[in-house]
Image 1 (cartoon, one colour):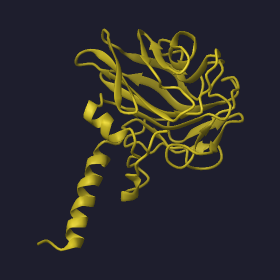
Image 2: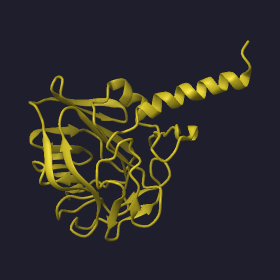
Image 3: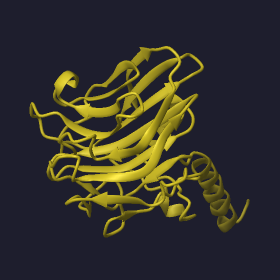
Length: 249
């Protein structure tokens, strides 16, 4: 029989290897700090994206998926937003995921991220999305994620798989929509805003956005299921405790 320390070490190594390989390549904002600076702990951050900068009255704190989160004000996005510094450039497959909680059921359209220079690329709730839902829009067919924006905590993945091509939307690890599309290229000239879009109303007052991740690949259904409720390794840490599970409301 192998000694217990050796077995534990092998288990920790296998778990860490699996999740470190699954870290987002482009963007990984955790919002666990203080002040207006948000480190990008992705494995290969694009120029300008590390750190992101919080503008206006938005703040880091509250209770996110793991640790803190970005706390909304309900203000307009010309004042209250996060400047990622990242000029959107996505070709081939990609995945965007985010955690949201405390989204009220209203008729007001609230935006969570977007870049108008990249083919009006944006994500919002209400309006054509309907209350309680998220929608991803841009130079492609609308992608609805039913149930992705409620008062309860939800994690939504938008996966663009160029090999099909199609979009897949997941909420809390479960597939909720598949949308056929043509080839999609997103090429912006201005930085992506997080927590808002252009001058529209952004993250609602008291709502929380957390674990914003952008991958330069299409996550498989298995990867989505394994990672949606886990804090992933980032460039700032190699601690096994980062594999902390999250229980949805």
